[in-house]
Every structure is written in C-alpha cells, then in structure tokens.
Image (tube, rainbow, N blue to C red):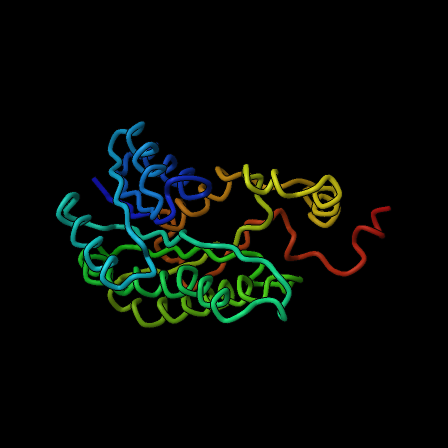
Length: 248
C-alpha cells in the first residue's frame, strides 16, 4: 500500500486531499501543527495517522520523517500544503511578519522535501508543492504571501531538475479562489461578486477540486509529468484587463 505524507492536513485543502488519497486506497500520514484539530480529524479516518509537527523547524521535520517511516515504512508522495497567510500593505509588513510567512510557506517546503528525499528515492515517488494564484500574478496586500508562493514555484523547478535522475517527480499546484470556510467568512459580498466577474467559470473552486489535481500528479497517471505548475483557478490566471467590462 502506498503512503502519502500531507502537511496542513487537519483542515481545508489538506484534509480534502487526505480524503482523496484514502479513497484511492493509499494510507496517509496527516501532518499539522494544530495538534487538537489534527487528532480529531485523523480519529475519524481509517488508514490515516496524525503527526503533530512544525514544518518550519528543522529538528521537528527530521523527527517527523523518522516517525512516518517507522509507522508506514515508505513515503510515495509528499504534498507540501501547510501554509500561512498574512495580508497587508508593504509599508506595514515588518520583518517579523515577513519571516513568519516565509518560515512556513517557503522554508517548510524546502525542509520537508529535503528530509523526504531518501525515502522518495527508494519509492521513486512524487512531490507536489502547493503554491497559489498569488504566486503567478501580483495582487495588493500580498507582498509576503505572494512572494513566498512565487518562490515555491521556482523551488519546484529546482527539485524537478535535480531529482529527476532518481525518478522523483516534482510539480506545483496553484489554487485560485477556493470556497473555504475562512474565505467565505472574510470575503464580503462585493469581493465575492468581483471574483465571480474575474473568473471565467464564474465561481470559486472547491477544496475537492484542488485535491483531484494534487492526487493526479502523485498518481501513476502522471508518470511523465514533472516541473509543471498547474493553476487550478477556473481560468482566473488567464484573464486579462477589461474582461468584466467586456462581459457587461
């Protein structure tokens, strides 16, 4: 049985991805630093085990990989989904806020991938890093978040180029606006309407739709796909200036 290690798995896209892998017969190492939420989520699932860890801590990551291998024996797919969002103007983003975002969104991806390489070599496995549409197109109030997600895309390319000789594939998924509980709680009706106008499919995506693409990239259906960034965004990244006005 194959094993997927998924970070940020207690909720949202990470939890939806866990469910998708389980549905395909994988076992899943669920990782999150919110231990209570993680324990509650994992307890409801068969063939899944929760591991509380901070992906921005080198020592925590080393211990995590050891524990996952002791439990499951293999890592066939690594999904680097854990992330934090901190939105604000450039002038108000002090260095502590900047580092807080980079620690998890970029350093965590680097540390997890590096620590998992020996296991992924053995399994000829796959890495999927979760970026964001904000890593592909600039937006206001996202100087740290957008920069971290753009860096994840470049890191994915580096991984694909260097690790391909070992049979390890590395790809990136860049979600667009997703209908999560958090997004719906903080997005005003005006923001929701503006997104719908700017997205060709006229709606937010779902966590399950993002999970489908992540699962595909880790599966045997994508054995010749590496070094790619797939925007799962309803066409948001493809739109140009004036599209809403042209529709009107």
